[in-house]
Image: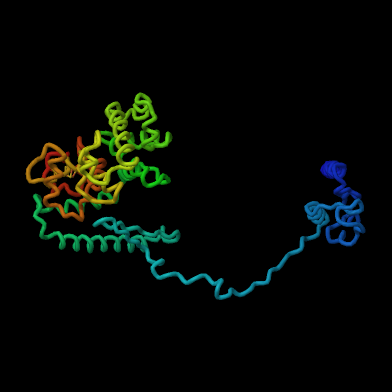
Length: 382
Ligand code: SF4
């Protein structure tokens, strides 16, 4: 009852405001069926136009409630089923859609993605089928690659087995470089010129710095809109604070300020498109330049040898004699490693060096190369 009174008051207010609706009848909640007025009953009762003073006030919601109070069942609407026209019939699934495995070519490596269907998750038969197919596929590809690289004169005869094992280990274990590497630091919504600049900045910051620290510093810079002009405006002390705790942040802030001046004046705020001009920028070395060419310009100009690639190449015997500097390692590797692997090897080795073959205490016990690695014997703990 209280509810009805409230509604009536509201209706009165509306009526006073603009002569829109004036209640002439109150629906009272009683069990007497003759008091009940339904929307269908009201059609034709009203003598005036809709909204006139003689119109009967009703609420469809109230009517439904009232029907239920009186024990009437609500009308059921039955929809006629139409056969689907050819245009509405769902298209037949492509045969490829039903395949459980998708293969994506990435350089010389192939990433195999398995489609896991909800009802197949618990099926050991399906899972083992997929595993078998993936294994078979990998073996075929490894054999194909092995044949094509059989003529390669490498410092270590089992170099290709090393590579294959590292590929397998990298697929089964993700590394910080996969999600926070320099190639993941640029703002994908920015224009391509700005993205290239951001690639270069990430590489400059990444030297002797963990990927996570670089990634966070890049996010702080991107929050300030990371373009050459913006960096030029930021005072050097403020830039240092934004870069901290990146290693050598004071030097890197100074180099960055000098670099943006050159980029604005000489390259119209873009970055150079060749190694020679990239290494001429303050704080940019050959490793950064080659990786920058690959990431920013999509051109392979050399192997990006950082501390991980340098360390692993020496541990695995991929260099004819031990090298002291990454640059020496790069020159030695480029003499024999097939060009088709140059782009892949940096990403592969960096992730492997971050997770298993770490600088201190490499995890040789879990490494698939432990029986064919020249450096494994003294690291295995029994
Ligand atoms: S066996 Fe040990 S040293 Fe050799 S690649 Fe594996 S983790 Fe590195």
